[in-house]
Image 1 (cartoon, one colour):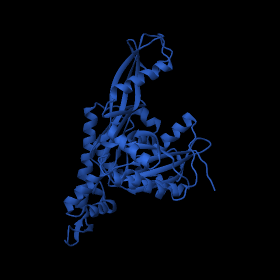
Image 2 (cartoon, one colour; image 1 turned 180 degrees about the vertical axis):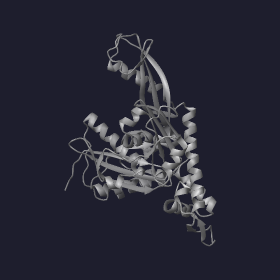
Image 3 (cartoon, one colour; image 1 turned 90 degrees about the horizontal axis):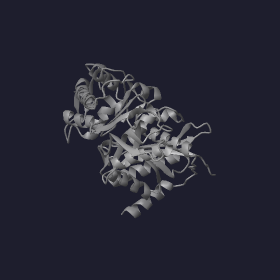
Image 4 (cartoon, one colour; image 1 turned 45 degrees about the vertical axis):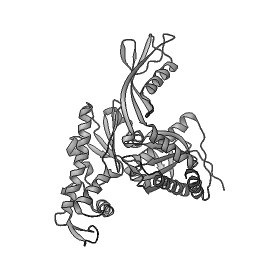
Length: 409
């Protein structure tokens, strides 16, 4: 029995997990989530792949999990790159107008010039977002097409990523017989999933807090203004607990997930937690208040570092929509309250929207990036009218694993 569908697939390769989201595009253009997969991964550090074998195995397993749930095969994906591999900068370039009147081709040309000037042997431009255009001496133009002049300029925010990081991603997917539709800066994918246009227009900061990094994305007046990353995330909370409680990292992670609170005031003062000590040490009874103190200090530090970054970039004002936090490390109770106290503005938890289907499974910040990548895939398919079909598969994940092991080694 075959099943042919128009699909959009997001593959999120993060510092602590790898996940895949398969969406089926409905007749009215919506994205119906039909398959997901998620597995822990230890192959990345601060968003960079440091163990190709471990990352590859996790990727193959989540792809197979998502395929099994959806009952179809993944042929191509939108894949994200994040962390310290990605950064944004504002640039200005200009071109001479051959016809003295701006055409759509001229606009595309000046954007490509901005892209080429920010690309290098080390970095590749993933996206160019125009902030404003300039014709001769007149600036602040939103749409220059049809305007007369001798020179067209653009002020744009350009997102670049490490070429080596992109090459590794593409190589792994090629070995797995999966085509890459597009490599996307993951902060933009998360923003696509959790930020409505109204918040972008008012001015908003989105923080995607992952295992090894915290990605910062700022929109003002509906335009992307800033993308950067801090090399700190949920894994640092785990390691703080491991040191402070003198317990293995695996036990610290369990304590964080089961008992973690980012705000000490949410903890009953008399509660204690049994914690396994290092080596042959006996189980210790640790006050939850002490655990909360360790966590709250690190969470405060993360938000304080973000605040300092925004101040350095002159982005602290005009953020009327406040702060949106998402990513797997944002779900700990008390995190939004700590953020509100740090930023002195409204804070909300960012959940994926504009989807249907298995929403009960993906309605969590940990799937923001994966859903956003699938939504961007949907947008691309609708814009181009391209067909991406899937069909019933049998044991494809095992065949991919065998093919990759043979080719890679």
